[in-house]
Image (cartoon, rainbow, N blue to C red; front, side):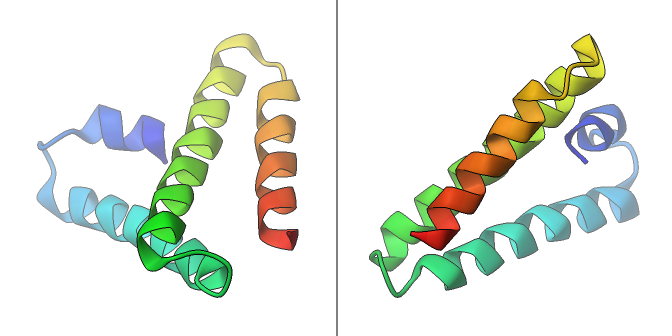
Length: 83
C-alpha cells in the first residue's frame, strides 16, 4: 500500500482517498486494541509506528526479495498486540 501511495501521490484523488482511509482504518483498529493497556495518545502512537514498520518492511521486501524484514515486523506487531 505504501508503494501505491507513493506512486499515485496527489495525482489521483479518488485512489489517494482510499489509501488514506486504509491507513486511518489500520491506525484506528490497532489503537482500539491497545486502548485498554495504554492512554489513547500512546495507543495511537504505537499504532502509527506499527503501520510504518509493516509498510517499511513491505517496501524492503520488494527491494531485496527477503522476507525477514516483513516476518520480523509481523512478529513484533503480534507480540505487541498479545501483551
